[in-house]
Image (cartoon, rainbow, N blue to C red; front, top):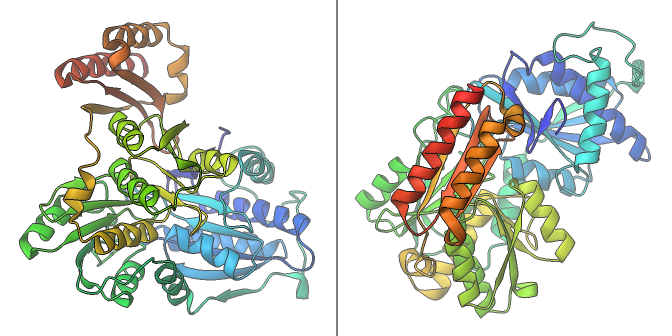
Length: 459
């Protein structure tokens, strides 16, 4: 990765390293690429989540786009996958999302979509990064306003226009409901919106499909996004589903490109289990080209076994939905995702979409007449322990001989029946240590041992 972009765009604490000045430069750099690749006057779609800092950063991005001579269409508060859809639906040259997804409220991020609705390849992100850093003299701090950064700076009628997409939410809701395989009449669904971007979209789509819908955590105040709610904290959803006697529930993250499900007993059904449910249903109904799905190295080995039982192969990609998508496109596959709930259904949309995934799961419950608990039982999870080690120098973990030795020793201890994955997060200042195997106590001991060495070396 470069100095700015991680596995999912630029992500930092807002107004520290991710400043309005940097957002402005990223807008200019992205718009300059759109100009080079477009005939006529390009259009870029911009949307974001409910964080306090989103309005500030979105204004800077939009200003950068318009200053380069590109028009900017503001979608307002919408999920990340809605921006991907609107970019395609409006024939725009690019889309920009201001969001830090599942991260705490003080963080924010900026990510780009191409005209086809797919996230930018690493090479194009590199071009945006070069342009943004050049505009700021190579740094991430404030730039001199009006400086000559080598990018277009038209005046008069050449300045880009800025306007609002007044029906952005309705357009996305119609799209998401339109790709559902069935109506959901009679199904009682609880939706946890994480006080984020899905507060208007997901409830509207489920109601349009006939589901009885109860909504929680749908009162964003700028600071409560992802706080003790949503896909990273599903406890409130579990309790609500049990208390209400609902059929199932869904929890989004802040920008609703993820979803976790909860069955009628209040048990969490994670992204791996969702893929197991969807792949089994699709194999049985002829909807899984190649009889294969794509997961990541963090996916549970139980997914591999569940897929094998229905005649399906699991192909492993690097962590990050961008890399899952690349592998899916390379192999012509339509289903892939991550344990965290980033699920991509490529015949329906171009990116991880929590709403479309939730509708698919609910549709399978309706079509089969089986509760989600029974459907999810096709996958038996292996004990899996994940420790996130907060560090100050995450990119130096590979240079430590002590860490390398600890990892090698741990892998030898787990043997062929288990596995260990150690890598820095692409979006947070942490190194993730994940261990898996049949003996939970042994896995925990190994993982905590490696995490302790990393903490001592890099804290």
